[in-house]
Length: 400
Image 1 (cartoon, rainbow, N blue to C red):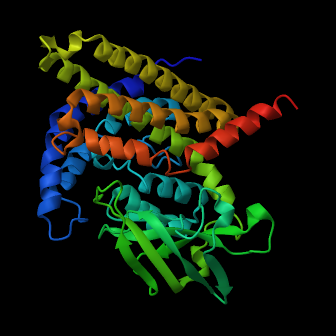
Image 2 (tube, rainbow, N blue to C red):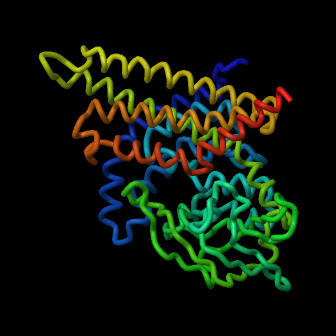
């Protein structure tokens, strides 16, 4: 395994690190202030539009996209270090149009969309002239087991009729959100993994009602996490992604790269927390000397460095496997990074919070938000227990 960065990655890393230092980190507080000042807190602030214009100018745009010459054409291994860098800032991914849920939705459209669907939805998403949401999780069932989904997709002539209630539909509150990818049951009596389908739903379709915005550990995200009611929502049959019953296959088709993106962003969050921990430990004095001289704090720093480097290597291995042997061959590793990366990031952020004391739990630093994000992402996109189940099943299978 050769994890040396390619010349293309080295070039982009240099540009991206300068972009983050010169533009993104200084804009974080401005971003928060502008969001708070907007009449609609979910509207994209001007500072983000400015940052995106600068990213385009620098050629730092759609770096995640590998399909059909639509993005930078990087491999998973080439993109992974870049995802880590932008992951260090909560607003980093959005500045280069590499933020969820749009990344996953764009990949789905690139892999499974028709030419007409790509022209109508993928092109403006790649341009960031619109945003999107993914409607899968439901409040009434344990959606970690997607076979539980109760929302329905029923054919009626040249249309499909959708009914159901979704929640934590991230991105739906953004005024720029024009599209949802909706997952529901199109054949409740069919084979277990052929019952579900995915279909494209305009966000303003009649019958779509946003009930409320859901917080995440008390934080309100700009994009919003909506609870959404679908009541007799009619969409053209041409909006079906793939064929009826392809929902599970489509979901599996994008899980590997998407989880690698999450994991490398987690590494970036952990690196930022460790950087903050070290600086605080050097600046803060207690009991006659700097915190950095205390054995317990030094152990926190040392263990954090070990754990971050371990996770980075595991994620790079997963990316390498996906590139060289395909997503299916990396199933165990992809499941492992989803569990381990967020656990490590959360642990490192927790140590940084403890080092900062009262300031760590306030909104004066980014740590409280990183703490909430790294905890929530142990549930989102498949809870850790589901991935552990996958790893165990694959491991046991070797011995049967």
